[in-house]
Image 1 (tube, helix red, strand yellow):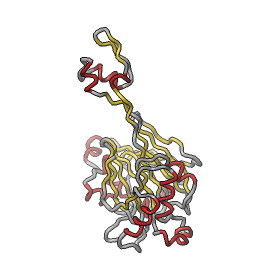
Image 2: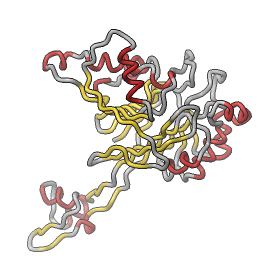
Image 3: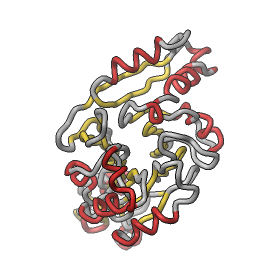
Length: 306
């Protein structure tokens, strides 16, 4: 099960209802954090998220509302009882645009700080979506998008899985055990003198794709990385009637985000990163739904199970 928690849905300025950007993706107990604005770890506390589960941080860009919570999070993750007892360091992978290594060092130098976390930092500069990290169960892709500073969009792609139909297997006399395990991994088995092929008792379940397109103006790479997304999480700082202002600040309107979702053939669009000018986001959601009906505006602590 994959679960997404929105820790902050405001743009640059936090409001009483919305913190600045932070999104937490839980995949089978492993945490992936997309951006880490100020107050993110407090939002995690309120949401009941264990910060020590974070293993990967995906930085879209280095504007303060997306990264100013990093130093506090790293410090508190390193200062935990388990590390104190064993002397081991928590390991965190950090991906970000060009300049991330230098800027991370500036952060570490910005205060009196004993780093107790093993940071594996990788800088990404890609003109088309490419793989940047992979496990047996999922992969992460990234691509440059168009903002006022080097910026990335990311996609989390769960790998396809084979699922055994226990009803069909039972008719052949198979029960839970090593035979089922082999069939589920795509291997044929011999059972009571008969060869059983995986396709006879199982089917492929397509993995889910979750895409994060935050600060950017509309560009081809937004569409490329978003293609066939099950969940497309995208910035919409402004309502449709403020396109001129969006263009000036290299952001998107609700209509522009919805058009990208439509062109990318996404299944669901979730909008976030709203300007403080909007006390409610009804106008933004209505604008998006006029173009792409499967649109919804996120709110702080909103959870989506995928």
